[in-house]
Length: 222
Image (cartoon, rainbow, N blue to C red; front, side, top):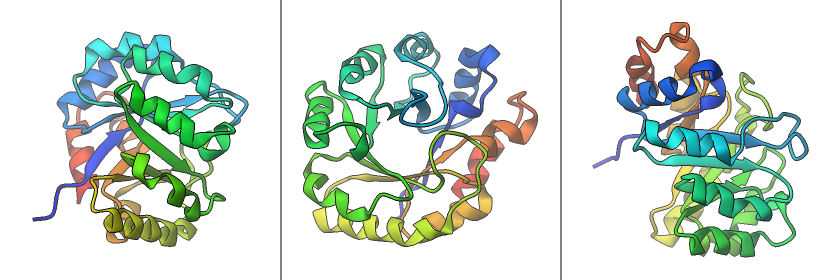
């Protein structure tokens, strides 16, 4: 039996003035994960939130917090996000000199470890660390800003990552982030994605009022 696709709304597209309410609303609407984009203004050209905000949001949802760390160097901040309430901590291979050790650190803190591939990052970087991964995140836009168009050039990479996951026989989530809507969700799922990060497709679909977050999430599941 095919497992349902997981939806991870990205709070980058939420109303920051009422962020706790937004997190509670998407949880009630059926979000599987709460996706939190952490940007440092250095590794990516934008600046977002830190561990204090993650900690403040933690009481608003019992769903797993899926923290994507776009930070370089990333090692000094991993423990802080773990302590703040992150359940999944994802890093980029380019965000430190020893990503294998960073993934080990994440798991040693009792958290699930994710590895993020930018559009220009080859899928082969997965091979030396597959045994440490709980999640692979394929970026279908260049990270840094929401609202970008889906890069179809990444579909073969998603398929290649799925082949690697299947070869392990392990439960590793294959997450996609960037330009996800009802049409691109279908394309990503067709080549092996099982977890979709969606910002505008969830939060912008009802004018920020949260009235139909459940409908938006259901439509993305297909």
